[in-house]
Image (cartoon, rainbow, N blue to C red):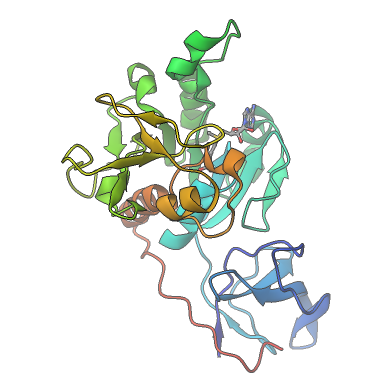
Amino acid sequence: MLLERVGVEQPHERGRVDELVRPLELGGETLAAVVGQGHLPDGRCAVLIEPPRVEHVPGQLGMLVGDRPRVLDLFCGGGGCSAGYARAGFDPHGVDRFPMPAYPFWSIEQADWRAVLADRAFVRSFDLVHASPVCKGYTPLRALSSAVHPLEIPEVRDELERTGLPYVIENVVGARRDMRDPVLLCGSMFGLGLEGAVLRRHRLFESNVPLSAPGPCSCGDGRPVVGVYGTGGGWTRTAPGGGGTKVSGPAAAAAMGVDWTVDQDVLSQMVPPAYAEHVGRQVLEALGHSSAPPVSCEAGGAA
Ligand SMILES: C[S@@+](CC[C@H](N)C(=O)[O-])C[C@H]1O[C@@H](n2cnc3c(N)ncnc32)[C@H](O)[C@@H]1O
């Protein structure tokens, strides 16, 4: 059997983790402890291993296939970018200053992005660093309150460049003036949307690796547009450049191609996974890695 170590949900209510704490041995030596195994919502099987980096371990679980490149996902939120990078072939590690129970992978820490980047040895264990700095200061929302929101992109870029690693910075279109040659991605480029309506959700991606869009943006071709904002609801913004009819909860998740949460607070901040998957595949190609092979999971040896 082949069992690929994929991002694994934590053993809480979403999971169906059915076995806890089991040594993984090779030649009499304990290499790792399998502390959980089960199935992801999409049916893929997964194992949760401590320590997390185990390479090519033939054992009673079969073969853990490959050692995937790692992405450090700063400002990870509910994991839209992490999920996309995982689809492309990365192992994501999320960092958020707040608890993120919706984050769909086991590897996440609650921390400030600066503190994590300051740990140089830790950062060097990654192949790519992604950052989605807080966007409130770059959106029209900044005019709606007297609160001062940070414009952190230049500082984030400085720190990312100091790592010497490939990096990606993602943000809203209002941040263009602070971004270097960003590529614009739109839901229309990935067939995202709902019931004939297209998801606009324009986002900019900057990188020190060449990036391109998968094709032209076609969200202005007359089709209805849906958007995922704030608390959701039926409010419509149809002016040019507007976000369209707001959808929330399960409809928002479906429009964004998200299958692990319907939490509107989380979704309204999320980047559709397809965007980061597209970016991640380009980074992998630039780094000389192949993109993710299809995951193979057969019942039998894992139980
Ligand atoms: C726009 S959301 C990111 C969405 C995420 N990229 C996705 O695809 O789902 C920004 C996130 O940054 C987090 N954040 C804000 N300040 C932070 C800080 N100083 N360090 C780490 N995370 C922070 C917020 O809690 C929020 O979850």
